[in-house]
Length: 232
Image (cartoon, one colour):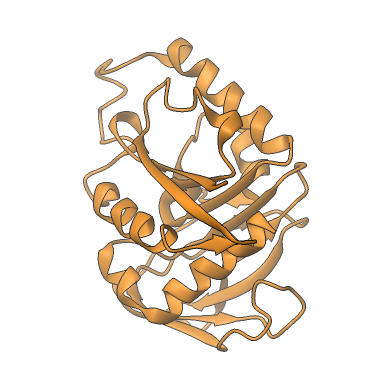
């Protein structure tokens, strides 16, 4: 048997000019292809966000969400399928997630599916327009919690990356924060958390702006830890 992993990568109404979702999803696929849990190798599929992308979700063990917001003017121009065409996609995702679904959500996934309030509960938080922000891209350090959760138990104390630092995210009180970035004022900002409140398991990491983030061995280790816990 294999572990089926589906990476959902932003396209169309779920992509933007600032994130190369294809490149980062490729790096995620290369990393997760080497994952083995309980002796089962992983079978990784990368799929763009289309309304029919989740037709076989019942056979998926781990869903990785690496998607974002539409290009400015995309939806206003009426490009692509309309909201009604996307309804089955969101209904399928929500039902699967709440039925013990396992989700690894990265970076801009805090800012996707903005028209679906149920996504915030599944994610355990989200980007808030007008409140959330990020300083310029550059060196960043994600400080990890010490113990208290198997995902970070025995992990290095911090993850050093070249990345964006997402700040001002809204985190549900039922989510367990396991990592923090520091803003330009020295304030800690929650950027890694887990939640099981919705009936499944979700890990959200704010890291992963572009492929350079995945060059960090500590970041790769963290993602493998996250996937292992989700599938445990």
